[in-house]
Image 1 (cartoon, rainbow, N blue to C red):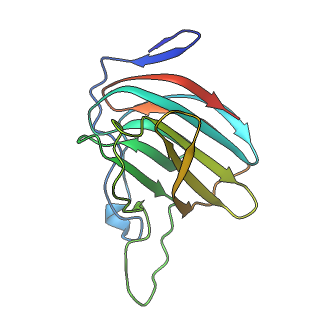
Image 2 (cartoon, rainbow, N blue to C red):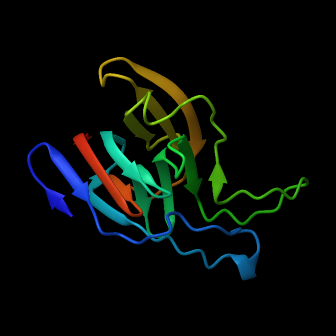
Image 3 (cartoon, rainbow, N blue to C red):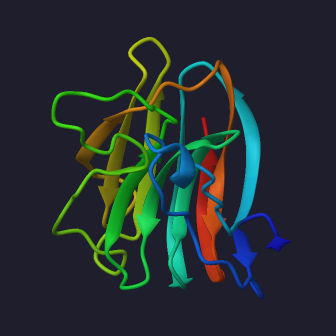
Length: 171
């Protein structure tokens, strides 16, 4: 990891990204993420944003995280922007659908077209909203996920293998 005033470079990683599994099924709950996460602690409501300059591998983007729980918004291996979370929610409902980890299923956004990504956390509602921008000035709402996290969490940029970020900001 190289950090200078305007840029964060993550190189040499051999991670596989965000783990797969199902928090509802005990034998599938031991999910392991494999990535590099450059972060700072925030408390209460807040946001993290960055420009994805280069991205390689299964995950390159911004993240809010507390222990195994997280919200991730960034590029996948194909360059498509994805929003996903892991809440450790293990409740069953009548549909018996997987609740965690959960992909928001957004479409129509790529890191090439929308290189600026932002996550905004509202501590009172526990919703985390994702925004994307072409220029870092005009932001478009993409989606939101209900993600209960503790008061203090980590906010930053993450990459499974290699990525370069600029204009990283934590508010």
